[in-house]
Length: 373
Image (cartoon, rainbow, N blue to C red):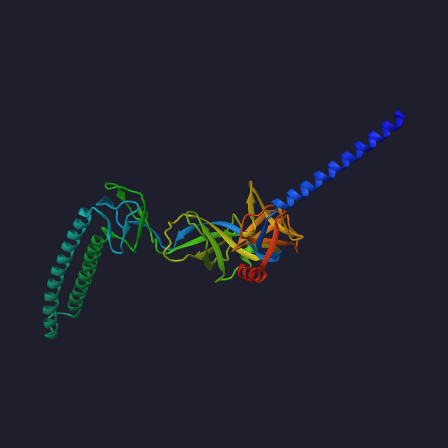
């Protein structure tokens, strides 16, 4: 009897637990259905896109015109008033050389020229007199020829003295050193009072309006480059990269680095200086990869992911992103081709939200991929 009572009690306990379990499941299901929202979204199917393969090499901004300004004369520098960073125009006075020695040379050359002129006048008088006497047969031909030679030598002496005088005057012109082109003073290698000499630079100026990017590339990349190729350039201090054009290809390789020099044009009106660091990206073809609109990638608690549509509901999938091209972003992992993802929702999504699909953006994606390639 006691045994039967125990069995009946166990049976009742089991039925009670089963009923309570069912009740809990029903309550959970009812609670889940109450918290799930219905959200209108736009979707698209994950598909392949194309992004360029880039070879990135360092470069720098260089001027097309750069001159080391030196004096053609030996002398002490005076009136060196220009400063580093100062803008100069073609023909502006940069510095002067003390002209005392040059003026002394001009005085000496002028004296020699006047002496030669006096000698020429005397020789002409003698030659005219002997010419008359020779016609009258009062002097011999030998005496006449000697006087004619003296007159010819006097003429040559005058020409030589005049040339020396002109040269001395030209030296005075070189005492004032002027800017050969419009530019900016970038180096000042001497001060007033220093001794200037030919081949010893005093200033360095650059033309800041004719800048380009110069880089060195390996032989395999150089072999596929052509004049006029468009290249992406990112300059330090500039917010966005821009497109430059290859306009110089130096065929001779550097003997030490085995690289070739390439120069690229820059857009006008850029506020940059020579020496600015550049990253030059050469296009080496394209590769296929999964691409989705940037708007589809959502950051939740520091994790990038997208909402995938499964059975009409949204489920968050963590993804690893790669390169960004126009309005598309590369997905390296976390998605599979053919999956349908949410690209726009009218309100923030949660896992399990019920979706009402408004339209697909596949045509827009095709257009964006065409622009990106």
